[in-house]
Length: 202
Image (cartoon, rainbow, N blue to C red; front, side, top):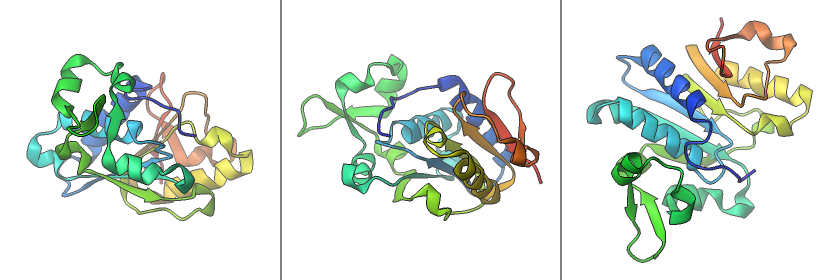
């Protein structure tokens, strides 16, 4: 699914970033996985939220893996370029927009994410249903607007994979319509009553 926009479901993402920073305080590397990143609006939103809360030195410890599987839509090229039509960026607060976006010299009507943020986001193609994570020891995994397209059994297996891929005490964020299946409810503890943000158990 390619439909999304910058700063979508902002309260959930803010909760996730705040909890992640408390968990990862003092670590040499903060690893985040945005699974199902589509055209990049969500991982760049996450990266900007981290940048707003971390100094330059701290922000350089962020490694954000952004993954999706639809190579036919050139997701990788779009996410890597981080260039978006200006009308798609209207929802971004003016102060954030001025700080983290710049005009594209040879593409009128486009703005791009500044290099400082773009260089912390690493795109990879990944089919979640193959159950092969792109890494491990993540402090945060975000998977929104993806699980609803899977069968109940598939969701269970993907969530098990996320649990294995999280660092001890790591966090998992998903869309508000999703619930953790009862069969694996013991693997996650909800940490925000008004958001689908969960902490790894065990």
